[in-house]
Length: 314
Ligand SMILES: [Zn+2]
Image (tube, rainbow, N blue to C red; front, side, top):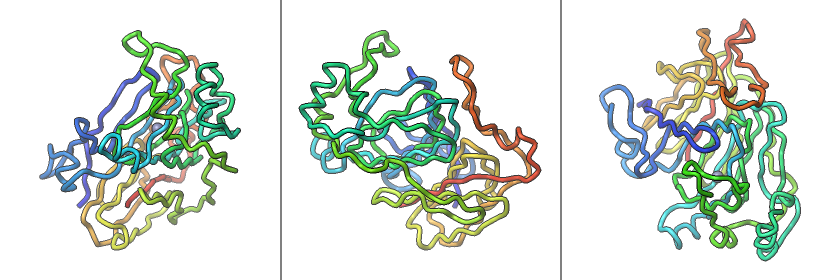
């Protein structure tokens, strides 16, 4: 079966998050239509759904943070850790984000650099453009910065250790709590040669982006329909539309939405639609930053309908 859920829109100090598939307790998405309407994601899945899928529209920089891995999160919080990935949909001019270290430091250096307000100087900063992919295993220090509009796929967990918040106030006017000590032993201090996920885009076939113990994600850029086998996918396949408008079998889906294919063994078809639909804007009403560099395909008078889906399963 193919299920659509009512998204949860959250306004935060730095922008908005739209949770399109969530089994996080207290924040579960509900089936929006059909005979199962009103049921939670966890009810239809029959247990805690392992992935949390969001669209993040950052007007300002998010705090620099890290998430524990499964072992540490189980020990400290009795829950899962958090590995995540980002697919950049829109980026304003100069948009960037932080993933990993550019200089190797020790846990002691980390504490000292926070005290000296110098942690940002040792972090790897990346300019971003639509289509960029970052895989963030638990333990990798990271931050999404203002001007990024992206899809995020992550483990179902809300354990975040906030490391640095640019000394700014939260929504209540007070500085948000930092988790310096908890983060110290959760961080992976190693410097890696690259933090970006390289891939070769291909039209009308699935391109695998990330294969991880927590999720396997592919990109489908389509101007004609493709069939996706389901029997090797486990119990579910989440289909996330990041650009354009199309169909998952007969279920319509537009940019900024996701559907869940659950307990299905027959192949599904992913199809572009000629009906145009603008992707949700990453331009901002309130910020002074320029609007998204990449215009939705429907706004560029392109004659060929195309759609971009991410698929993810476990
Ligand atoms: Zn994070």
